[in-house]
Length: 84
Image 1 (cartoon, one colour):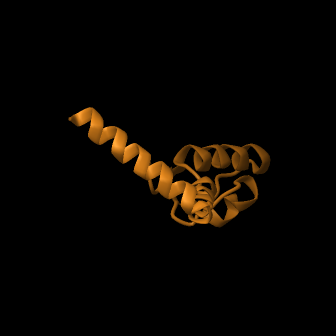
Image 2 (cartoon, one colour; image 1 turned 90 degrees about the vertical axis):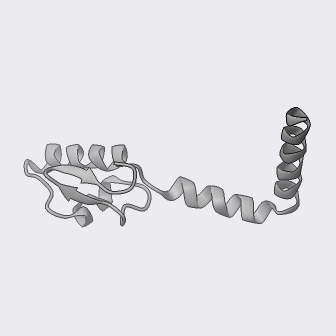
């Protein structure tokens, strides 16, 4: 019974995605555009390497990151925010 339910739910989800490709694409783009904590930490390291000083605001990291970093901040030299 559990297997039949899992197959049914899987088929339903696939069918919905096939019938609504615009929403699926939009959702994929939103997820791909979000930066991760590791991305922001890497940008901090790049900033320090190029400027020989610590960044004081997340805005200074924008040139080093592709994606949305607006939910992050710098705390004690490291990224703080979603998933950190």
